[in-house]
Length: 231
Ligand SMILES: C[S@@+](CC[C@H](N)C(=O)[O-])C[C@H]1O[C@@H](n2cnc3c(N)ncnc32)[C@H](O)[C@@H]1O
Image 1 (cartoon, protein in one colour):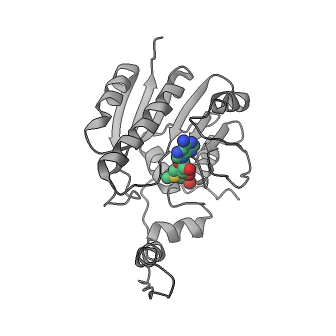
Image 2 (cartoon, rainbow, N blue to C red):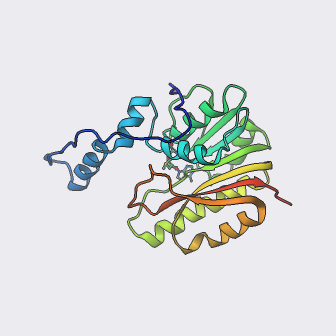
């Protein structure tokens, strides 16, 4: 189900009643903590209420409310799309005349109006599979790709950055003039090279930390708009 899009503008998320989870036999303390955090997270509750598949949907809603890159009729590639929250938002905003292609190595349940590609982005066939669904020119490339956390900040940072850079290698020859590239990054030094490239290729580049991105997470997003890429 594609949820009814919320109107653009300021969003507020209720706090609700705090739920305590007791440790159960066979469940690790870390799983209990995760469950407790999920049950008390206003974005998780709101995502369930609105029919979004993930709390991540709110990150894209916030980014698009602020920067307005998901225009009606746009062709959008969503990399690292499972379970599908961003694709739901993107489809809702680009409307019937738009096109959304979602790729992930994990499977994604069918979503009305979204073309799904199940593949590792680093596999040989991923680019041709994406092109077969959307062609060679796109308006927006989104990447929320993230490898599972190792718990070692420097390693996690490098892994995220290599995903972001690979996403940009894909986007660069395919974005139309005026196109947008959005990617997850981690706060820290290694995003300098990517930032330099984006500043060269786009009219406007911004870092953003949506309210729905957990405060304790080093995750942020880079939004590059108005591409004027010269080959
Ligand atoms: C934070 S989740 C994305 C959440 C999604 N944006 C949403 O709204 O539901 C990150 C995703 O990146 C995917 N991912 C990580 N590495 C990948 C790769 N090499 N190829 C494709 N997907 C990848 C993971 O499988 C995971 O589903």
